[in-house]
Image (cartoon, rainbow, N blue to C red; front, side):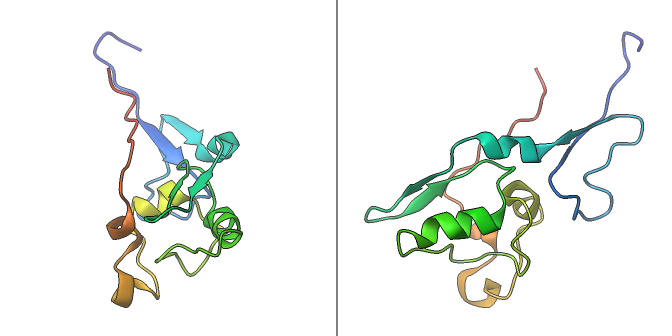
Length: 116
């Protein structure tokens, strides 16, 4: 690669993306499922929340929160998708009319761009 060349990098969970979002022609695709090894934590206090990585599956989030008598306010209709993948598309589902899309129920995001 030359001095001014750029390299396209795409994050890919399970590949259920819109318009090829999880692809990088001539670039690098990073499988985000590897981030599932990051410990997901449920904080069941007065304002309950979950710390989960972008590679975590919604089915795992749901199963973990149910142990505390909790569940996400809004999730996708297919739970074998990654948290980061659905949030990148707002996370519109059957619960959206009542609780908003998934992204409206996020308190904090850490976005890693790979840029210096």
